Image: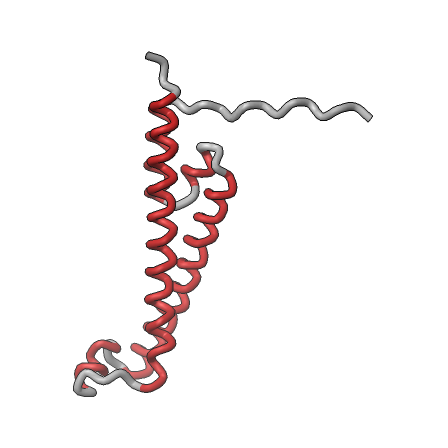
Length: 127
């Protein structure tokens, strides 16, 4: 058997590449991380953002169906009910809150990764 070839060192990013990764992460968490070579981190950020999208779409489908069923916006139903939620609404509101939490975690993680990529690019920048 032949020995494995040595692994290539990671590609060093320039300041401009780090900037592109930063803006990519702001547009979609994980894309910039993936581009910068942080594959696992980028994949997990993309997965979190994807889960947030699915939860948000489920909440939005509930919102539209409830609006169609009641004939008025769900907020108006709550206001007419003296500020009390109907009993079966809590799980759907938690879907919406879960989507916000997941997306916030993905964005925060992407921001931290972007800052690390930028610091790495600055550290290896020729003087």
